[in-house]
Each structure stands twice: as C-alpha cells, then as structure tokens.
Image (cartoon, rainbow, N blue to C red; front, top):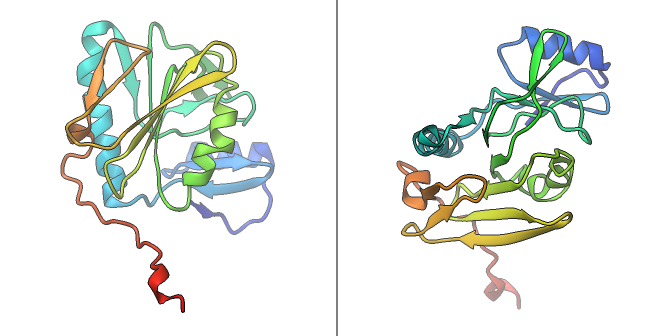
Length: 202
C-alpha cells in the first residue's frame, strides 16, 4: 500500500479520485492509499482462489467476486477492496454516487503480506465484523503454505482453524465447498522469511 502525496482528502475528493482512476484506492480519516503493486505470488494466489471458488460455487448458485468489487463496511466507511469475496443468494448493492458497493458478502479472503498482515488479522478483521452477513474469513500467507480460517459461531465467537499442508483442503462453511491448498498455491514459488538466529548472541 502506497500513500498518496496529498496529506488529507475529503470523502468527496476520494470518491472522485477512486471513480476516475484505473487504480484502486482506499480511504480512512482523510488518508488515501493505492492498493496496486502486489507481488507475483500475491496475484497468483488471488487468481487461484477466485478460479477455484468460481468453479466450486457456480453449481450451488453462489458467486465469487474479484478484488475490484467494492465492499461496504459499516465500521470502516466508505468501502474496502478485499482480495476475494463470495456469497450465496442474491447480491445486495448499495449505491454511492455512481459506485456500486456490495453489502452482503459472506466470505472474505485476504492474501497476507509483511506490510498488511497485522492489520488484516487485527483492526481490519474487527471492522469486517460489522458486516451483518459476514460469517467466514480466510487469511492466506504467500511465503509458505498457510491458511487461517475463521468461522463465526454465535454472536461474538469465531472458531479458528489453520491449514499448513499442501495435501489439506480448506472446507468452507458458508457453502458446501472446499479448496485444496495445492490449488491455492499452484505455480507459487515459496521464499521463507528470514528467521532470527540467536546463535549470534554472545
């Protein structure tokens, strides 16, 4: 994410910028940043997940949407650009000027990077919870096979499951569908993050 040079934008200025630009921008409290410039691994994983969801969900009457789909987030207005979203049933659209915002996603997927992981796991997850229809969250690492799945259980509790083996499959709950990790990471070359070597400490 790269911040725009201007320090503060009004909401109206941001909406005009985002509507007219070929890039995607997000907004919060007057600050605007671009969502472009993802890594090869990030883009490959997003495309793989979208393709697998489209294939698995279509026979069920469900739909998946790419990262260009604007998602209305009540506690994080005006909208966000998740990497992938999906739902079963009829999409519900809210209009903001000429822009269409999806208001009823059930599944949200974010592919993690070093710069966004903390936010995606923390504050952004909290904001997403303000979406009434939101019941399932996937956080997908790109440096190694690792998927965190959060499934809403009751009013406040979210069940957490982790997948770390390419032979495993993520079993989705919002729809009777599953995605194999080897398909999520198809054509991805892993580069492990550097680890801390305590042997250098005397």
